Amino acid sequence: FWASLGAFLFQLGTKEGYLTKQGGLVKTWKTRWFTLHRNELKYFKDQMSPEPIRILDLTECSAVQFDYSQERVNCFCLVFPFRTFYLCAKTGVEADEWIKILRWKLSQIRKQLDQREGTIRSRSFIFK
Image (cartoon, rainbow, N blue to C red; front, side, top):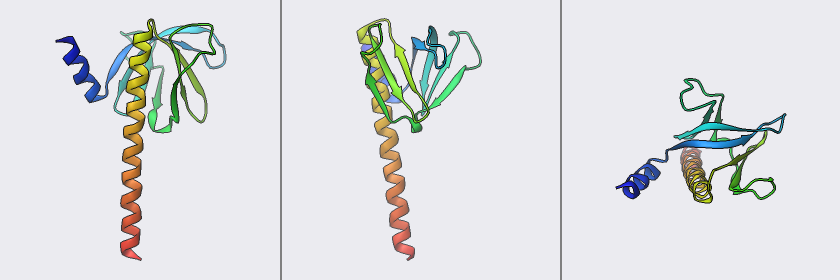
């Protein structure tokens, strides 16, 4: 049952859970509640917080990769033009799940952008 539920949620492209995040200016590590839905990765102070601390637009993310530069294990990073976000999961399996779904999400975003650009190119070709 749980395996099929996991596959179902992966198809929807949603995930949530606690990750430890490195601060931007002050490089301390804090545990935050993360939710992935549509093209947004939001993080909150905790699971009960109604308002996110920040919303990351994944259409601006250029890469998701394992990160071995931190003095921690099970880490990965999200690369944005304005900042690289360093995140760590409790287990290697959990980090792997986050990386897989985030990479899948980025590939879906790129496919949509390619389709839109292709449509715009074909329309501009027709109307010339």
